[in-house]
Image (cartoon, rainbow, N blue to C red; front, side, top):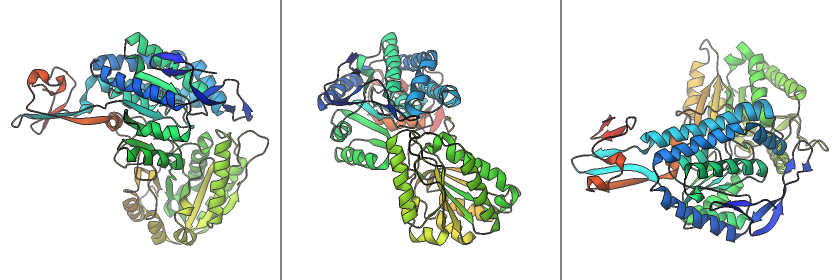
Length: 522
């Protein structure tokens, strides 16, 4: 039985059971056995996390930055072993997906968080000299719990991903809840993280990790008095149960859940470049076997011969494309259930729709079609997220119906509009964008949504059910750090008792402060 990381020690869990990961390519069970932690383990990581949060308040932010950078270096040094482990557990290719794309993104996030921890501008120091009231963002009390998802074993991993980097960068310890689809990958990342903790000299419980708990203990974890906040990426059903528990206890929880990511393909764009759009859409739907949170699962076009031809192009491409492995048996079953829901709500299968027996965790590349009238009769059911290599095409009767459909889109991470490059669709594009803007976190033009650039301006968030709150992002530093921070206000506090960021003299060259209504480095 593999060990859990608790308070600076790899130790045997007080387990209530065990599990093993599978190889999604073959469906075969892998060798390592991992514990299902009991409530005693949960209590242990919470108590240690609370102590560590108090200790971290006395640690220089430079030390936190050096930890994040050293951790990134150790991951880079072990990229071959970590990528191979992740590939075995997820069926995602070592190259280019894991080693060449996702792992560099992950270490870049860690280094960006280090830079934010060092320059401190993310804390938004605000000073009003007339009243002698000063405020800034600071760390929480207790540990931040991070639930990693199944689809990004590095970039969203509970012990390495964006939520982890943001929580640590803001000065909080982390309790990582590994995803059971890739426990060995998480274990290797945690080993590197803890090595960096020891090298830099941070509190022993700055990073802790457990693999799995019961559902009841998961709810106990996010609602415990000693927990600071939670970051969760995963299914809507599990997220809402955790949110209900956290809300009852008044504990912050930041959720990324389900998203259909609508793509509106306007008539002028189809008349101009239908083949190219079909290539882009198919590639985006099937990227990572459709297991991206920004997969375009909902496409809207206007009825006509060009749209009929477009459907043929999509069908041909879906039929010819290879079928990748899904991340597990549960994903296959969930995709099948979602396709059934869509069909029962009025969609018809154009291609695919069935799991592939005896071929590991695979489901046929699937395209469904429905009319705008059918959609308007059942908009909730026909926006069921089909997580995997699947998309639904809604054929609207006319431009007005396309705009009406845009106004009924549920909250999504992204919304895309393809239009004529010469401006023939500009009026319709503006009407659709006006409806979409408040329903999606990121609005795109003439571009598929599956790429998520890790830059400060990125919003990887959106209204419910994409996330639990439209005002926050899980990607984009420094904004992502502020989810795991509290606003601290100091009223008439003596100079020597203030945090360095709020004292009269700014001794940090790169720290921007709002002093008497003016942003300044002085």
